[in-house]
Image (cartoon, rainbow, N blue to C red; front, side, top):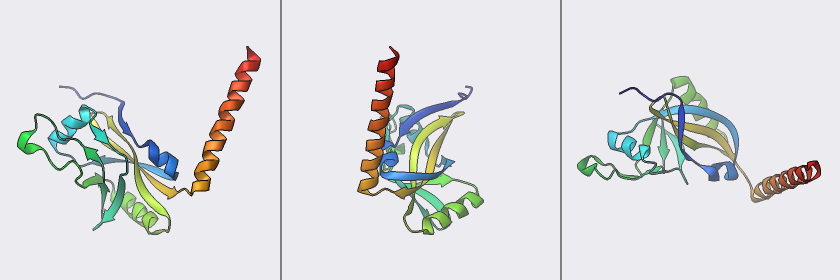
Length: 155
């Protein structure tokens, strides 16, 4: 069976873009078992409240919920288990250095299929304060109203 070409989105972490300033992003693979991949193909995955951490020179993603596959019986794993991310050693060093800085975190933004393989978009992110969130919402509302006014004048 040929692998599907291109990118097929699976899940987005919309809350991450609301709660963090995104500094940099990385594409990385994720270590999964077969029943998890089948469950992901069915769209049964949740990235909310997930994050990545460095442990023993490897990066693990914590808090991704992949529902058990219905026909998986004994092969199903714990839905919340830590999963290893697959990155080059130089990228792991950069991400480790970034997490050492105060206020920076590793946050998965999205999960998608790329040429038949599951990939994670991992971001180096800086937490937003409440007033930053309010400012972002105000900017978005102002932009929307300006676009509405512009469309109203053009018609």
